[in-house]
Image: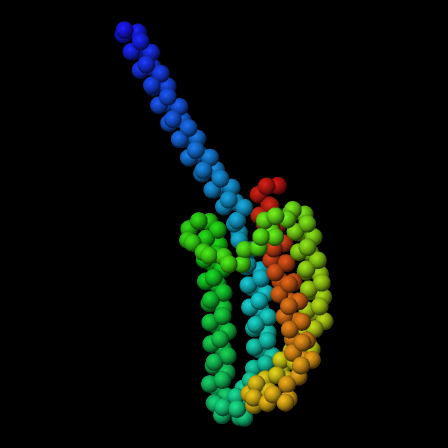
Length: 210
């Protein structure tokens, strides 16, 4: 009888050890998966695109400031030129602060420090092979960058032409061709910066694996 009880106790202990071992393996595998996910997601997409986007915003504000000051201080609202200039400068600092905070939060979320709801997740990037994605992004940089470079000056001229129209609310003077050029530039520039951002971030992510 004692022999049977001893065998049952031994069997029970072995089962307990198996359960503990399985639990430890599950925790270890879970940690490994989380570590792998962090390695795959950091740095997250966006910093290059944000920098180039702000650079464009800064250039456009700089190029259009005289026209904006003239329209809104002398013709449309009769505001003080210094007040209009201060408003534009404030807009530059505000956009810069928001962009930096957003990028910091995105990178911290990729490390698991904070939470961040990324509504710009692309399913295409998850199901498409990396080599095909890289080719598509490279094509986006070349084509988008070329179109953006060719349409930049016409787009700035179109924007300068739209400012008096907006200030005077003169629909009859609306330049449809200029608006089309402006939209073409922004679409091309967005495609180029988006693609370049993905190429740079993917390249950085691949460095530790080499």
